[in-house]
Length: 124
Image (cartoon, rainbow, N blue to C red; front, side):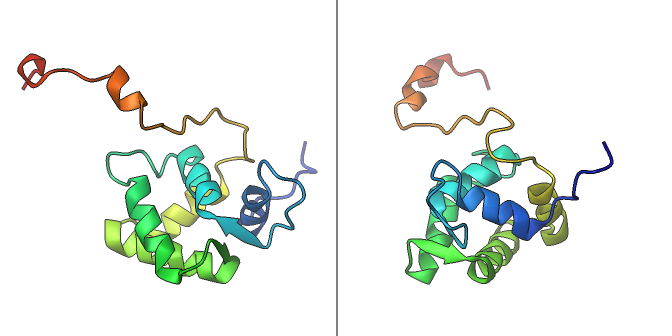
């Protein structure tokens, strides 16, 4: 049991960068995989932080994939924008487990309509 290596942020980056495509080399991560990682770590949860906000910050780099250093800069910008503790956020991302270990629901546009309530039926 004591033979497991401690998780590192760059090791997690590598694993999530390869998630769902083993042909990837793990040196760059896409926005989808980054968002999936943040969802699994319960940082991205649509109340405090949304996929739109991560997308806007990700697109600041004008790339479809970021390397580890660029992704760290993206994470720093995100923590600054949303008033999150950067060290705690990094720790949470490091310790959230390997990709797919915990079920993650990535909401789809149509999911909104499954929970829709007319304005007059909302409880205030």
